[in-house]
Length: 392
Image 1: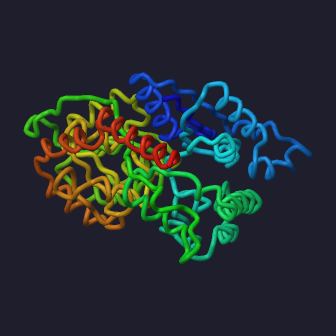
Image 2: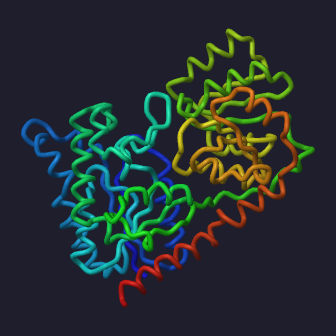
């Protein structure tokens, strides 16, 4: 099978980029020919003056993307196009290029961009789903995309336009969790079907990381947070909870806008059992997770698909995670972790006190759901089903 991966890189690297590379290697390792077509939002820096004024039209439909993809599809005899991200430079013209050449398309949904211009369903410190009912142009009220009314309006127009002309209805989609699928299908309104439910599949991301779990009784009495130090991740409520936790260490690996706040808070409150390590290399972070009693992620929003969760599962390390959104979907309470109310310090304290040996069931989760070979079989089943339906 000849597969064309399409991905638009944001200016700030993220988990989507890792997923694209992992999936490309997985397919190539199984003998498929894989072509990666990519663009980057650093191209935006090249737009000045009059050229910048044409940007909304290029985001609506990129002739460059359209022509280049059609050429690749023809020359490389592509069987299926798999899109990961089109915002901004790739644009939805990628879908149109595939349709014009008669090949099927599937897009992995990494965030909530089709319904929320901020892509997160999170605004001003709380969950926000107003645009689901009021329409994507409602986001202009809050400047949800890049803190700009103009940019938000431009993106809302692109999304609304392609929704109405049927660009997305012809495509297939892969959601990372059932929660994601349920949210995505809320784009449909009564008899107005913008995305065909029969074309929406569920397949999680996978990890190539492998590790033999350390027995529970050999683990250090510590819990680790590994990720961006940001308000949306629940950093504040987590540290306030640790004012009440005396006998368990908290190891914090990561940097971000709240790093200085975290350091000041720890110092001012004399939290000797909280260690802020700052940036830590991935291998070292995994060593810390592997020897800890749990990973903690008290996120305040729905999240996409935090890869650190699956990597923690591989180590047999359970996750104390918010019961909302995708974290709540990925973490099964008292099987591979514990659910918490992400707004409650006391619930974090409660979860830490109730931690117990879930090493075996946590590792089993990783093997069953996030193993590379199992994931490959799922992806092939989706591709084959899509191509079979196309040929009927």
